[in-house]
Length: 230
Image 1: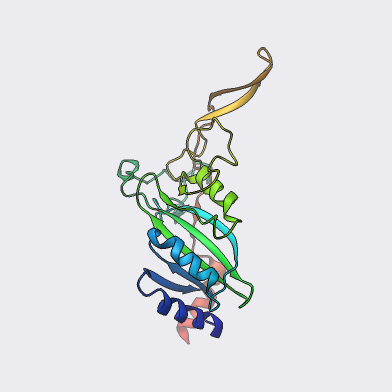
Image 2: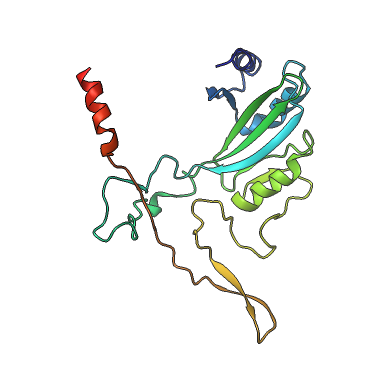
């Protein structure tokens, strides 16, 4: 941890002691975790206080933590026919209810004055996930929040024009949610008879292709034996 990162962490913990959920340093990056209801007051302080001066919002995104920590790909076995079939899905779809789903909004801030970055995270447990818009604090949040709304269904209260930005107006669902099928629900094609693009049920069948196989590689066996002998 560099001196500037340690100093920022200390200042954040002192300034936001009443709002703070957690303050983490990982790979020399500070992450401040706060409740969603304090997002406006905290962001205004981070922007206006000369001690922080985070004048720029460089990114904002949504995260779906509903299957966080669950791994379907790690295995030490292969199939009799190679890797083409992969592993069967081991997630219990029935246990993934709306009350247990946890979304988050992550803000990436830059202080040009102090030449330091900060990650700000707010967890959202309600359905639909909802948080106040920060467009009045940083204008750059406008399209970022529209993207998070489009892909995750996160609502930003007070946004001046909250509508889809990547998918079309008739799209149903939010494609970056973990409960959204990878192959989607509908597909489009050009109909030569109607001479226009039409929607139809998706014809793609999703299947797991190549697992991440964990092996004990013989190339490193000699090194491990030398270390154990030493």
